[in-house]
Amino acid sequence: MTDSAAALAYVETHLDQSLDRLFALMRVPSISTDPAYAAECRAAAQQLADELAALGFDARVAPTLGHPMVVAHHDGPEDEDAPHVLFYGHYDVQPVDPLELWKRDPFDPVLETRADGTKAIVGRGASDDKGQLRTFIEACRAWKETAGKLPVRVTILFEGEEESGSESLEPFLHANAEELKADFALICDTSMWDTATPGLTIGLRGMAGGQVTVRGPARDLHSGLYGGPARNPIQVLANILADLKDADGRVTLAGFYDGVRPISPDVRESWDALGFDAEAFLSDVGLSLPAGEKSVGVLEQSWARPTAEINGIWGGYIGEGFKTVIPAEAHAKVSFRLVGEQDPDQIWSAFEEHVRTRLPGDCSAEFNVRGGSRAISLSSDSPPLAATRAALDAEWGKSALLASGGSIPVVNSIRSILGMDSVMVGFALNDDNIHSPNEKYDLNSFHKGIRSWVRILDRLGAMALADAPEAATA
Image (cartoon, rainbow, N blue to C red; front, side, top):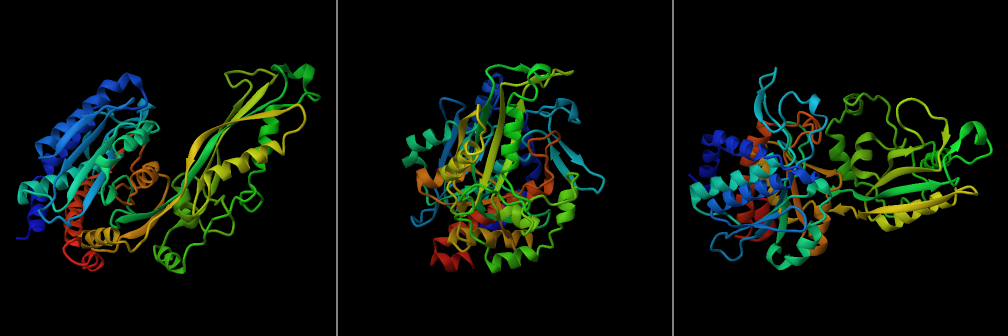
């Protein structure tokens, strides 16, 4: 029996214990956004560090100004040419509100059998990201228990603030760059195409966003006295935001589409072969009519086109009952998803100019930019990605989809600070209720996710034994 076969056999005979360890981590309410749960975040970090240390990792809980990081290192094989990988995940979770919509205690995980006989792990963090990071740990365990070693050198970084803005991440990467430097990163915070088709994310949209405030009169006014002659900031802001898109759904900001590249014929052909059902995609969320660029299909809009969205708007009286007031100011939160070579600073500057040129007299605007990140495109034929794809193909019996995804800021941080690209492979599904009540992670995703990482580590280790591209596609 080969080393990988033995590790895969271990996964099969120890799945129940793997679930027990996942449930133990899910029972810790590590909600990073709420200071009341700071101790629980520390407890989750310590639990992971202790477990990794028991597996032979040099592991520690590393303090930050916010929630701690977990950093762990494990040597690879004696072959000095074996790759060194950095695996990233996060142990913090979203708040559980609204609690009344949960079927059970969010931090009392359960294995639920559905009507069709399939099973799912239900509880906060099941998919995002405790179940996902657990698949990697359990794969490392399978290798250690059967071969006594790992096929590659591994550094692990688990963050505790991903769900609350990652304020400590970049300072930590800068301060610990030498320790965290590896050949490439592995990130398991993405999803599959469907229950039977694994996915590799080779592109991420960037982000620009912030808040705009439009001010008019010096104070809130009685609309019975000032209605008509007084400028209404809500109306002004609504008109300006309505002008963000034209009748065909295209964004009207000056230079907005600079740097947006069309998808290649090969990529378009592979997407067309998926049989994507745009009507079903929209009907799942109670919609029926595509609202984006009229000349672009729904899947391409989601994966390869930039967007402009209004994420919140308020002003005046918004409480119960009715108050006839003309407000002194109005506010909106606006975000842009970016692709290709779009520059987030340039996009936000164009938005500010869009607002200012449309402001009528007696009105002013103030902006609070939240920051931004560029889109990322990864080579579809790099040796690490090719090795990972071959491993997924072997486990799932079908070719992994090369897809684009939403923004994952850590990928940009790892690239810009550590000088490394990332291989993004995850086993979540679109119906996992991430960030919502009754979050779940299919047992099949968890089980085959562990098996997939066993194979991926094996392929990555073999990649260094010969010419890398040949080994990766063997």
